[in-house]
Image (tube, rainbow over all chains, first blue to last red; front, top):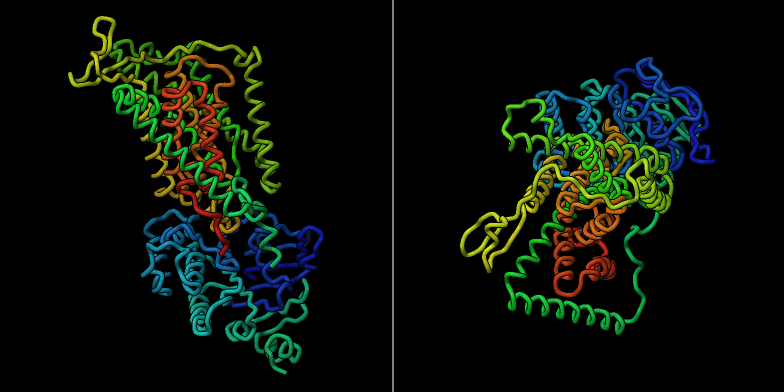
Length: 236
Length: 384
């Protein structure tokens, strides 16, 4: 198991946001967490990447306990979190954003290679390389956020709502690239409100409701579950 | 989602600490205010023009003293603006770190004769080279001590308050400022007295005019109509400009500089890049304080009498300079500081000496009324 989360509890002040969730991601998988707004999907990713502390439970990555490891250390281990809302650095250029993605690495030649690989996936970024991040369109910003994440050469990519606010055409494009990244050997934990799209690329899925996992299984099984159909896929 | 707002209390807490609420007065009142400011500006231009035409030599002399002050303020203002840019804190203890810089160099020179170590270690060395290396050693020591002091202050006083309301940290900064002033005033620390400062090197005066350029000595006074300046003026200008360039390079070209700019925008996401944001913040405090330490030594050499409250006014004026230039903006700090230096020198020269401090804070009030974001400042960023 690449990532193993066991009985994870997270609080925001008095709010019990995650009430003991257990899930795992295997090597080479795309696993998706779906659920309504506020179900705790983003919270889960933030706990895994170390941005918020876990009150109880254990997070293991490659067998190592990373529950109390600070966020900046977790990146070095090979877990990269592409946060919700893209969070690119607006006053920095596209190149500088990508370079920051490679902050943990030191070999300049290798970093340059990774950058070329990112440009191969996202040719638009190459055209905009000296533009400020804040001047990019929403879709381009999403590409930059994902490209920046890939610059750390993660084994596990945590993607939070990559389709948010994008046109249907761009959503297709982003999901095509997610599959491509996965086929090159990066495991992906994908959080999405667009459950239909997420289930179409994922191998397995977990359904979150108010801080607990209510359903899990292969993407196929989850897609065919009648409650999921009614609640998340808009099928009566 | 609720998480996003929980994560960044500092950035979204309230309006910028420096900005004013939208004024609700009628258009008529606004016009009176604008008219008053325009009349004030016209008066200033008139006084300056008349004096410039009256006696251009004196005017140039005053501008030189303004430049000397301005470039010192620029060094201090960098620390205010860098720290504000990254942690949104106005570090009022910064002026006192500048004072500590002066004192460190005083003790290094007067008590330990650090400035003469090259001559002691290498007896054959040329006196000029010895002075140069000795003086640089004194300056570097002051910069290191100030940097270390600022890192300690940040760890002890500000870091525990990183997620507290901004006003809490601001009040703490004022507390730290008082602590440094009055702890420094203890007899076994710096003592409360004015102390004559022993310079690590001699300062010479030069004249420049129609007859060329030369050194001012008792035998050869400056010819009529020439302008005089001192060697420390040249050193201040050169050092300040060098530090500006160094800082630009640091922020724009280096990895830590990129991390600093990223931390200024979005700390949680910067951590996700693998950046230890706490270390970046410490580094920012250290760099700003090192500049203040350098300024402290140069200031003491230029105005060689030091005491524990010497940092208050230069510190506050550098703060005004940073606000005037647009706090958070590095070029703004330089431009604001040069304007402040001129305002102070011209006021002292043409109105009255005590007025110079009043003018500094009048500028602060006008900036906050007319353009709270300063010359280079941008309105508070929107969150993407």
